Image (cartoon, rainbow, N blue to C red; front, side):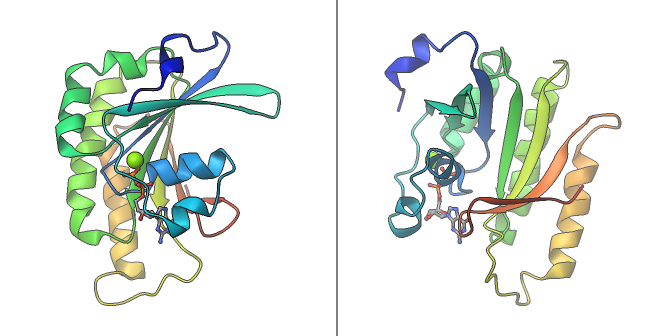
Length: 182
Ligand SMILES: Nc1nc2c(ncn2[C@@H]2O[C@H](COP(=O)(O)OP(=O)(O)O)[C@@H](O)[C@H]2O)c(=O)[nH]1
Ligand SMILES: [Mg+2]
């Protein structure tokens, strides 16, 4: 869904782009940032169609947060016209559902495409959110420290040398907790 404000974003707002596979938690993160925590935890948000832009004001700064719906059809569209997302962007946040190891490889594949689409652009911060890292996360055969550490290695290998980025564990089941791990 396109927000009507998209066409006239405040010049001075900080542009953040949230991108990642569908169901990774982008819209929920955005809702938390907007202060409507809880709603997304109890109701499944509708999958985002296309992209949505929300304006948020916090700590005397204005933010324009672009939420790129992650369904395959849209992701492929984004790469056709990626300049639109890169233009004026201060920060990219790539969101990965840590609880979905079956789609780790797909998430890495898209991460690679995102990185190669923006690598020419200077001064864009880049964060990876290993999301749904809930406080009560239960480990099992498919999901455990070893699996996650291997995955983190693969995430790191996806970035070219000298590319500056951070990897963080995030969850909506805390007061938006973000722990920097690299
Ligand atoms: N366990 C858990 N579920 C989450 C978290 N964040 C979002 N979800 C759930 O993941 C699903 C997909 O979230 P959504 O925000 O629609 O993902 P999007 O497609 O990337 O926008 C929803 O059912 C959310 O309630 C989280 O931190 N932990
Ligand atoms: Mg969404």
